[in-house]
Amino acid sequence: MQLCSRHESILSKYVFLISCISTICHTCCQFKHEQVSAEFNGEIYNFTFQYRDPWEYICSLVGDESLMSVHMWNSVKKYYCEGTFEEQIFDEPNTAETWWNVDVRVLLI
Image (cartoon, rainbow, N blue to C red; front, top):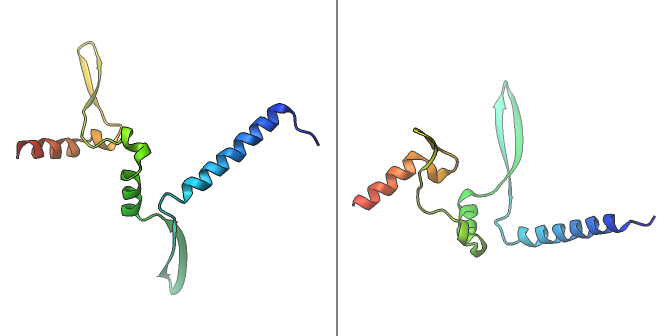
């Protein structure tokens, strides 16, 4: 079976994508496998799950130079304004009031 040029292009992009993902997977913190057990109604149930250590994951993001231009270290306030109507928007962790309050408090010290 012969592929048309469109399919060959899609296939080569897919192969390239898989190659990139494979390379990237080795630079990021790896998934860990754990198992927990719980007793319920006299029976023991085992649960196996995958996870990334949150601290290792955060450290890998902070240390990734390719993300430096998009890291948000400071809090921001965003607003939707239309005429005299104004509404604060919360769409990212750094738009939260708690983050803002901590930043303001640090500036006052």
